[in-house]
Length: 470
Image 1 (spheres, one colour):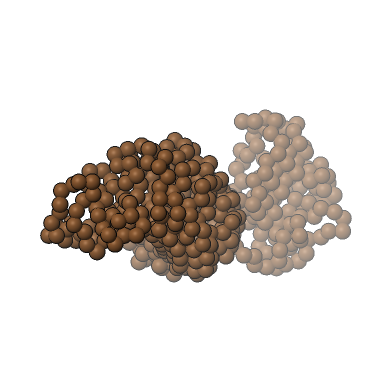
Image 2 (cartoon, one colour):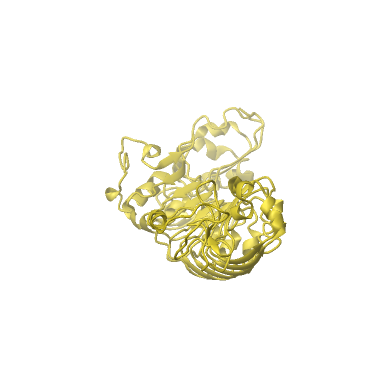
C-alpha cells in the first residue's frame, strides 16, 4: 500500500500470466504514473482498470499480450499525449505488425506489417529467440543432461508437482529458483546455457558429473554467487570473467592446463577459489594478489613454479593450500602480513622446493597451522618456536619440532612432532628440515627408548598403506 507511488519498473524479467486487475489499486489517481512491464511473458488483456489514471505512461512491449482494453485508448494524455494523437497504437502496435518500439511515438512512425506476429506490441518481425520460463529452463536441463538416467530425479517432469519441489531445486518465497544442486547425480550431455538466465539463481552445484559446461551467457546470471563444478567437463573457461557476482568458484579436477587463467582476475568478489588437482604451470601471477577478499585459495597438486607470492594483502584468508607444486626460493618475510593475528589460519606449503629460513615475521599470527614438510628448509627462526598457539598447540608441546623436524630426523607423514603419538625420529639420510620419510631408522630422538626393526616395519606399513591424510 503506497498511495504516492509514481514509478514502477519491472521490465526485462520473466513475469508470467495476466496483469492483475488490482494492480496499482491503492495509488492516488491524481498521481502521474510510469509503469514499465516490457520484455516479460505477460499474456491476456491490458486491463481497463488503469483508466482511473489521467496521466500514465505504460510500457508493455514484447510480451504476449493479445489486446488493449478500448477504454485505455481514450486516455488522451497518456503516453506523453500520444494516445490523443494515435489512439491504441500509442500504447501497443496491433497484432501482425511491429516497429522498433512496439508502439507509435511520433508522426512519421508507423507499425509495419508482419503476418508472423500474433501478439501486439512487438519490436521485431518473425520469430525471436524465445524467452524461456524457469520451468522450461529446468525441462531443458533435464532433457540435455539425460535426466531419465539420474540417480535422484524425484518429482522431475511431474506435472502435478511444482518445479520448486523437484529434487535438487530450491526456490525463494516467490517460487523463483535460487539453487540447483545436482552433484554426483549421473548427469551427462551438456548444460544448457539458458540456466544462466534464471534471474535469481545463486548456487549452481554440478560437481562430479560427466556433463560438459560452457560459460557462454554467464553474464546474464546477475545474482550467481557460488559455482561448484569440480570433476566435470570444462574444455574452456572463456567467459567466466563475466560472472562478476561470484563469491565461490570450484574448478577442481577439470584438467585445466597452462598458466593460471587471467580471466579469473575479473572476479573481484571471490571469497573462495579452488583450482587444485589440475595441470596448471608457470608462476603465481601478479593479479592473484588483487583478489584480496579471498578467505580460501586452493591450488594444490598442480605444476606451479617460481617464487612463493607473499599474499601480503590477504586480510581475510583462513585457508591457503599450495602443496605439491614446484615453488622454490625462500618464504617471503611479508607472507600473509595483513592476516588477522588472532584468526585461525591454515597454510599448506608442503611438497615444494622452498628453501632458507622460516622467517620471524610470521610470528604476527597467533593461531597459524602451517604444513611445511618435504621442502628444502634449513632453519626456523627461534622466535617462532615460542608460538604456543601454532599447529593446534603442538609448538607449545614440542617447540621447534612442532613446526618441522630437524635435519637428520623425520616424522612419518607429518614431517613434524604432533601430540603424543608423532615424534621426530633419527634418520641420517634426511638433508633438510621437515622430512616425512626415511628408508630406515632405529631410535627416537631426545633419549627415548630404542625401537626394534620389527616395530619399525609394522609402524611404517601402518601409515604408508592407508589413505594419507593431512
